[in-house]
Image (cartoon, rainbow, N blue to C red; front, top):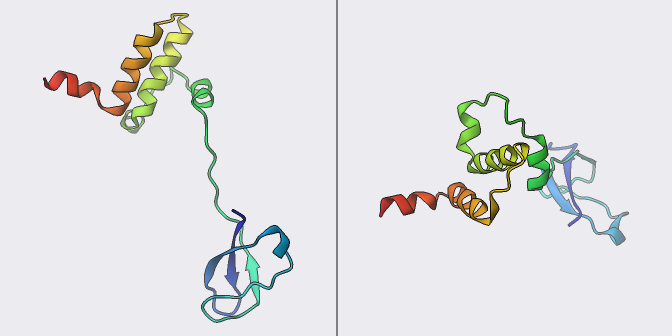
Length: 112
């Protein structure tokens, strides 16, 4: 969706407007004061990293603080990267255990 953020120069309200390709010349109007003197803002965006991208960036020898281990994805990625560095293929069972650990489901097996 072509969403753009604007700020009204009259009342300083910030708002988002959908501007479709065929509406590029459309006059943007502030929803608060109906003013048409607006400036386009630079919007925040996010970048999705694939698991492969994250694996390549992990340095398994770097010290980690406690917050690193709070993200379950990091633990599994670290284990995969370390196995790869050691040249070990632990097979599909390894992947299964890593996914259980990352999801927290591995603890269910120990509660029984």
